[in-house]
Image (tube, rainbow, N blue to C red; front, side):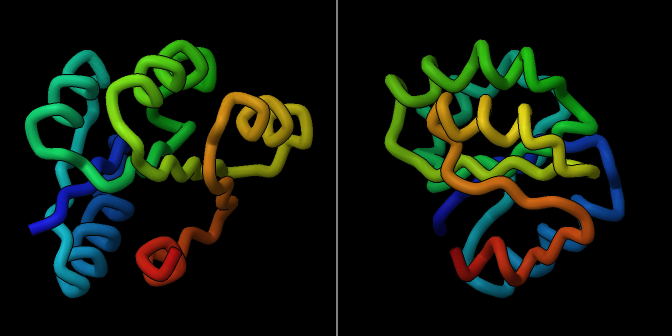
Length: 112
């Protein structure tokens, strides 16, 4: 089974994304603490990361993106509660694949 990582502390978001991705043949590894992110990528050969900026800051994400990119070739989605053009520009310059603002649609992410 293919694995993806969901970085969030929001239970409702985790439940929604888990159900949708499970229905499409993916196992969702929920992470709240990103200290194990790189080891999870190596261990499970993750296909994608869905990163909730409300859970872990953009600064933390920006520190990890280069390490993620050297560890594996996977898709990185960022979920944000509001659209900030400066944040969007910063994320895409760093190599993020997609930026999604609320309301989050798990089906949209699974199709991408």
